[in-house]
Length: 596
Image (cartoon, rainbow, N blue to C red):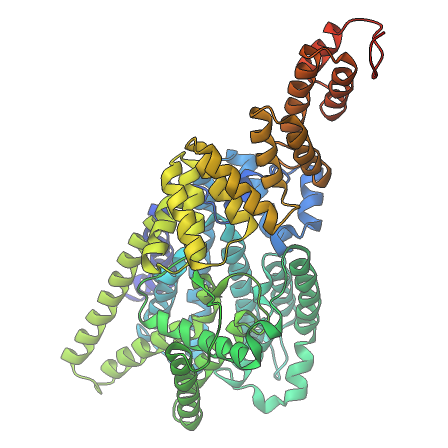
């Protein structure tokens, strides 16, 4: 009579508990807003994704917006808009549900891998798999991927990555004579296509499957040629996606050149990446949305030197212990494989590392921890471990999960809004220029201009002045009615970049207010010519033209006034003031030249 409840426990209740734990842990994230960290450009100012109409679908399929080709992720975001408009709650809920579903897939994958590694029996195998899945699901490193709306691509690609891996494991189980079951293999390949269409960071799946063949599946006896041939569809898809990803990145961002940090500096970044993610898995404190790349990377700096030494020592030790503890080397190798494309071998942006890049890379260590729990329970069942040791270790494992879940709950609150996020980040690293800059933007959006100016000044103290930074400082100064100081800063911005449309627009608008129309129109016309779609360029130029025309009309120069009114209507055909100004001009006057 007890067999049925036991089977139901392991088949349904444990996966349900994993789903529920993942869901509850990140509930504070549902109250979060869209952030000024890509959410603004991805959603608030981007109308193309809003809906599931033909034009939306065509855009999703072809865009490389922000340097990513992620049509499937955009499709789910478009569905979010169709269901709930621009309410951020629905987008957060979507991320959370997908993450929770991924945790369940991870449970089933971990169960099969632990079984292949030698764990058996109940409760050792299912409880070990559940512990691995919970460790994955509630860890604070998950917060960035789950709570940040922009990272829909992270949670969705991981869901399909796990589905593909699970399909492969089923293909191995259901196959015969070492051959993969065709139907399950087909499902695995199809899921991999979906993973790549969600985010390119999943391209290392074929290498991960080969690693699983070695351990714990122990299929290497079939021969490497056979194993590689059966993975050819995966490798072909990955290679195609690499080309697409490089094209997408080049459309939106500049790849960091090798000469920026030199070969030794780039190697130091790679080793640091290999070290950072496993270390944060063990000690997830002071997590930040931005770990800024230092202006110079010196391999002999303590953090880089320590990372290289630890990586070399750990790798050497695990290779030496590979026969006695193959799972350790497998988990470490898997971590390196998954981090490799993101480690600095190819680099863009301001970051040194990012917490979200641990989403896939830590899974091997999670399974390793689950294997430890499975071994403990199996040893207790065989009488090899005392009751006290078994209960103490189990209590410690439960306490660790509760601690991690509580930390993730608190960390989710950090992502509630832009000011909270960047104030947290700036407090963690007072020398993070990106953190101060984004905090300043958040404060500016709340019209707290004096605080915004102070934050922008902090950026200027950390990094050389740039044209955009000078323009931002000028904007904050102008909002405080410090017009003279703002003008000085705008001229500095244009000295650094004479084609900065925002600075041209701001300076031209100020000059127009001061009645210096010749200077104002020179700046505003240039801003309009550089980018007619730039926010405010049409409105500000048309207003300045009308104001200049009114001044010419009052000064008794109707010809010049007429030309300016007509130019204003060319720029903004619906401008009522320009139309009224033209109608108010004396009829029959020549367009230019003196009156007779």
